[in-house]
Image (cartoon, rainbow, N blue to C red; front, side, top):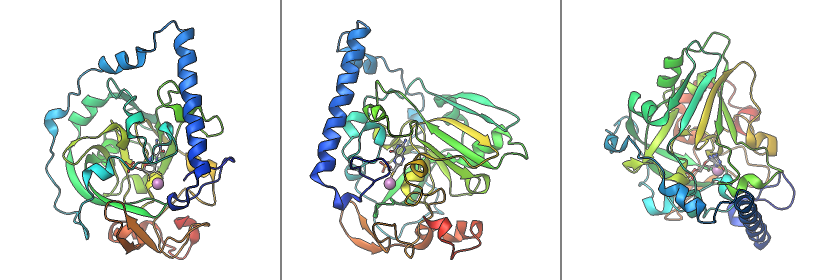
Length: 326
Ligand SMILES: Nc1nc2c(c(=O)[nH]1)N[C@H]1C(S)=C(S)[C@@H](COP(=O)(O)O)O[C@H]1N2
Ligand SMILES: [Mo]
């Protein structure tokens, strides 16, 4: 999902052109200038950003890691090297390349609130640490598959999304769960790209959201989640392409109508709502038959539902329908 000039255009990582890199640098400069201008207008010295980070309150969940591993979820491949997973990321808020881990450190993840509302009986604004402490944390080894045909295997720490859903009691009208990422252009320079539909939004049907596999993730490799992985709270739906796994969530809303998601707005024929992994339905511009492991470069055949059909195939009665797999 790299961009050329026009919105809605994306190319896989292995086809990235020098132009894409150039555009990225330009965006970065634009972002830096924006922050500079903001700093001057506000009379804030440029060191302000660094001072802000230093003020970040303590994370009150540190003693919860490492969480107990759930033995039910096993892998068919080695875990991805932690250092590779932490330095090869997609987080467009911080830029369109894979190396945004240093820029993501600008995000302040404490204090942090998550607003849970919409069609529920018990809406609530959670402080992130209260939420994490109230939920049953566990570790799960999951495969992860990006629509760009790279893959990894990671020990996530988190809790089942259904535990939170139960706590807020959706009404019978609720059919979709909509999730939204933070919006702060002074921190995330990528959000200065006015042609993108910020903030990042994702959604699941209520059936998908209450499936056992869907988890809200707060940590990885036995530690709290690094910012580039979407701290302090991100979704993981391992049977779907990675773009569904929305990062740094600030709102979870129960709605009646299917929400329009960020990538669906950018390119509906390339990054659709369902986005279930399937080797037999190619992306319009590349094959999905195989995937490349990001640390070893090993190429493996892609599995339908990323190998999680046992849990989720029942949610999609028509397996021949391309709709479910774009
Ligand atoms: N808010 C937000 N969430 C996001 C993205 C993003 O750009 N912004 N990228 C998605 C994509 S395309 C992928 S593959 C995964 C990458 O997760 P990782 O960097 O932790 O491996 O995050 C997903 N969640
Ligand atoms: Mo992705």
